[in-house]
Structures are given as C-alpha cells and as structure tokens.
Length: 292
Ligand code: ATR
Image (tube, rainbow, N blue to C red; front, side, top):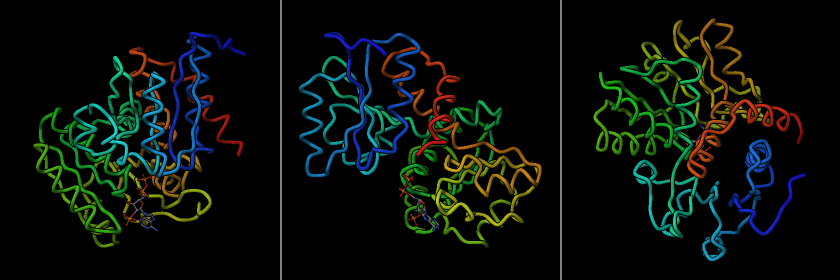
C-alpha cells in the first residue's frame, strides 16, 4: 500500500456513471509501479454540479483529470485553454493543470492511432472506413485525418453512421480542416459493401457487438475483403463477433483493449511528460476486465 501524505497529488475522473471505469485501476497501478506520489479517484458528477465540480477541482489545484460521458463536450467552456486537436474535435477527455490553468486535450483518437501503430498498420495514403459518428468515432476520424495529412500522399476517410447527418457533419469539418478526402454516408449494407471493396482499414466505433449483445455485428462478414485490417474499439468482449469473423477470413485484427490502454497512456504522458509502462497497463486491464 502506498503512503498517502501531505505531498500526494490528486488525479481523477469526472463523468456519470463512472463506477465501471477502468481508469482508476490503470492509473493507480502505474503510480504504484513507478513510485509516483499520486492517487486517482473517480467522481460521479451530476450535470447540474458539473461547473461547481470543475471549479472545485480548480480551487483545490488538482494536477489533472479525465472527463468521460456525458461531459466531453460540456466541459469545454469551463476550461482555460484547448489543445488544437481537442478544439477541432470539439471534445476533451484529459485535462492538465498547467500553472493553475486548466488545459484540455483529447487522447481518444491518439489511443486508436497508437493501437494501429503498435499492430504495424501503415496509414500513409490509405483508405480508412470508420463506422460510428458518436464521440469516439468523431475523435478517431479527426485524429486520423490529421495523421493522414501529416503523412502526405492523400489518404481517404469514409464515415458511415446510422444517423447520416452526424457522418455528413464530420465530413464537412474534415474537409474544411484537413487536406484529405472525406465522405460521410448512411450506415447500410449497400454503402458498406461498396466502401469496403477497396478499403485498407475498417474501424468499428459503434457500440454494436458490445456486451451484453455480443452476438451482434455491424458488418456482414461477406464484405470483409482479403488484405483489410479490422479494428474494433469495443473491449467488452475482448474479441467481438466482428473480430472473430474477420480473423476467420485471415485478415489482421486489432482489439479494442489496445485503444483503451493507449488513450490512458497518452493521458499519463500529458500529465507527467514521460512514457508509462504499457505492458503493466495491459496486465491490469486484462485482470480487471474479467471481474465485474
Ligand atoms: P461513443 O462516445 O462511445 O462514441 P456515442 O456517442 O453514444 O458513444 O455513439 C455511439 C455510436 O454507435 C453512434 O455512432 C451510434 O449511431 P447513431 O449516431 O445513429 O446513434 C452508433 N450505434 C449505436 N447503436 C447502433 C445500432 N444499433 N446500429 C448502428 N449504429 C449504432
């Protein structure tokens, strides 16, 4: 057990609900492993208390915090500064106290990119199909666009969503902000089949296939072509039906646990300006996912 003393720093999560979040176990495990004198707690905050809670964290001069649903966008006006990617995405999941200024970042998309990188997936000039245009899909689409632009040689992002308006809105923002091709379409079989014909990477950022409805899949397996990489951001179950079917077809798959770990790793890196031990983080997550 770590010694908590007068110098212990506080990091935390605010959201509603937060009880099942894995962030406290992940961050406390690395604090312990690295001998950092800090604790990480989860606070369930009601919407009417959000502003007071953030001002409280500010007054207490806490070192940093994460923000989860449903406050990733609502938090923005309560902060002092935004990192440019978080500003483009319009959502924040990590806040750092820099000389008493609260600075907002978004590490969700970076977590997804790191997950692909660690699976040796090349993105330069590639066509990526993202299904889902909620908070996660949007963060991934923007971060990916920034990366494709940086890598050069074009690249294309297609966003497919059940509510087509949200996909089209992302298409507009991507086209306005980045020098890449972007398209927003309705998530249906015809569009999926057409877009997956020549896609290099497929990312599922919808909740379809998530526990408890683990028999569901957002993509008909016949549309999964040889050579594509299939990445599902769902981590409960660790192997979704989409990933199991993709694996049977012999294509490369990337599991959601990777994004979970790397988005937390990036938050740690922002707070402490050093790289965390990601192997330890994977171990902690795997151990805790098996429990309730
Ligand atoms: P998150 O922050 O995890 O992205 P979210 O913002 O609630 O969560 O987004 C959930 C995503 O899953 C959305 O893209 C949602 O589609 P809609 O925008 O049309 O709601 C998608 N989704 C959820 N259930 C779905 C279903 N049964 N079929 C297709 N898409 C679904």
